Length: 329
Image (cartoon, rainbow, N blue to C red; front, side, top):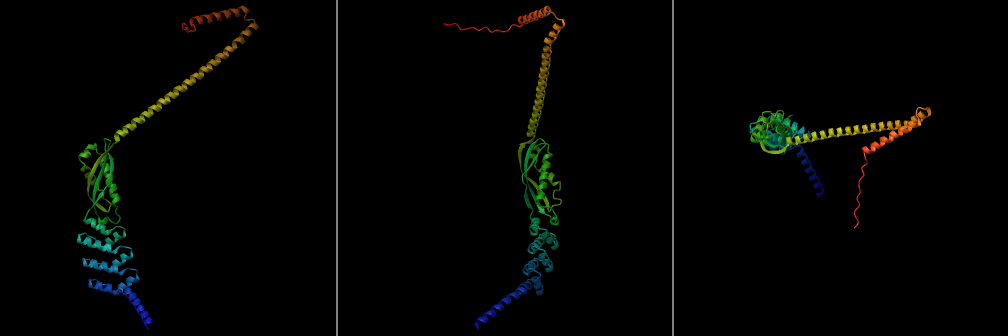
């Protein structure tokens, strides 16, 4: 008798749990006590539609206590769209307390776009300070400057959907700093008046198309970097030197080539002379055979050659060094 009784009690307990899960009477009673009128059958249908009724009811109770008029159908639709119902309601409460115009449709759209709508509302109330990375720029006098800035931004609720993020703001601010420093005649003027950079950058309207409104741009630090102008002059001088050396090497190569060509021509002329000298004995032999040259004529020619050689030897004597031997003791 005891075992069947225990079984029936367990079955009844399970059935009660299932019944309370499908019919959240406790949650419905809590909503009634909090001033939120939602039918019990609607909570049951939420279960069937895959919606957590606890999330919807708690969000409606929170919004109602804060003075907001929320509709369960809108919250349920946002939940089914994979939105964060709690953050949307908290954002609506914060916006209402801060007198910021924000309706449920806009807040739901911002949340579904992947942005933190509650953080955006907080940023609208308390502006955020973004530190830019070091920005390197060169003034017209060739001196490099490294600047760091602090950008104070406030979230623009109307531009959160489709607006650019922090990366775009930082990139535009960096571009403005580079342009401002690059247009300065001297780096000294930038160091003396750094707020001229922020004023010039603010006038460009860098927050257009972004999810933020730039309130101020403050130059936190400026350091002097390298003398880029001097480095460029050194590189130019080295390049000119290399060009001059290349041209000189080209001229030297041309001179060497011309010298070799002249040597080749001289060798060719010498070869022709030797070839012509080789024809002289043949011509003399032919002259002997034909009788145009006699023996006396031949000896007379030899005497002339000997006299010429003797005169050359006298005119250009061979240099003979006199060797002196040391005296023997």
